[in-house]
Image 1: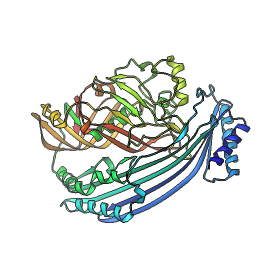
Image 2: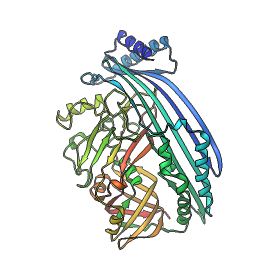
Image 3: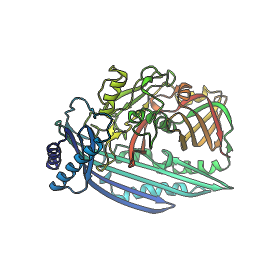
Image 4: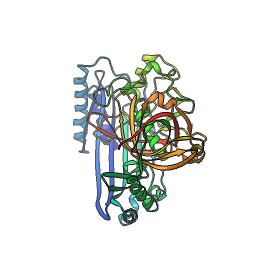
Length: 490
């Protein structure tokens, strides 16, 4: 396969490319779904191909193919150069990716048990036991339990001299119980919303989350929600669970710090960002308790790897430091543009922090979140509740909406509990909270400690035209926010 990529790079240069890289990607995915006591589906897919990206006449070109043959490598490389030359007719400036990045090495996701080595029968048994645990609760109408396993092998080579091989392995699992009654439909999910949590780990990840052991509790909560009081309307203190904080980070910080959005490259589809370059280093994003990083080196994250799809090493970058906005997610081209825009500094070095990724061989790399994390604080959750005279504890996302600049948002959760006098009291249904991103994060006055911190997986992040589904990670613990507007859907 190295020969195939080498041939593509050679042809690209002969055709006039001043830079070229090539990725060969092989992806295997296994999905198992059990629904209402029966196996709904077992699928195993495999997909292999290569993509060639070039700079010619100062513009990008990209082409790809599933045919792994020498003449096809030559055709695809030639096509990529033709596309670049056509794109150059409308360019406003030449592409600048900075000095060469030369990397060689291998990376493999560390895991204890290869999930593809575990028999399907064993996986189905776990799902059926979890499903039976939910169906044993009176009032539950539908149940679903699922697992997904992904293995992606990638070879990256560039005309600058990089040659990198990586193997990324992911395991995911979850359950959902839905109860119906008296015009009300309620759902509970575990461990995360839409019944799925995922990490770059092996089969041990599934065993640790113990789906059968949590099935009955989740189903009982779904039924209890049918009879719970609606979430009251007003302005109050809110404590969010870690998995809800993770989505809050994803939508109101992760997308807002993608530098291609900031420069308007995604404006036509995904939107832009309120975090414009003039705010770098000066803008108050949150309170002093808000420290956010983008860290592709954390073990287990869906944004964890050895190198990104430009061959830039995985890195840890400060995004928000004690509430101050200090960093973006960058690729090689946007990092250079940022330095030209605001002037080179410690916060704008002109070097990529390694967040350029593509969803597959037939997609061009773009800036994607790695693991964007709210760092742990000092509180135990029990102490945080005890310290709250009046408020609402919300858990597990149910719905979300945020404007295309990532400012105004509204999130609904599956379940909530009222807090009175430092105690968790009655259950509340259909809780919703709303706010503005900087004001909301500035109202954060407490974050729970590392014992509550989980690196949550978001395997369904959409971006780009044509659409790419990215896999991102978000480390988070429960956190408290003051003066938040809440209401309940009746």
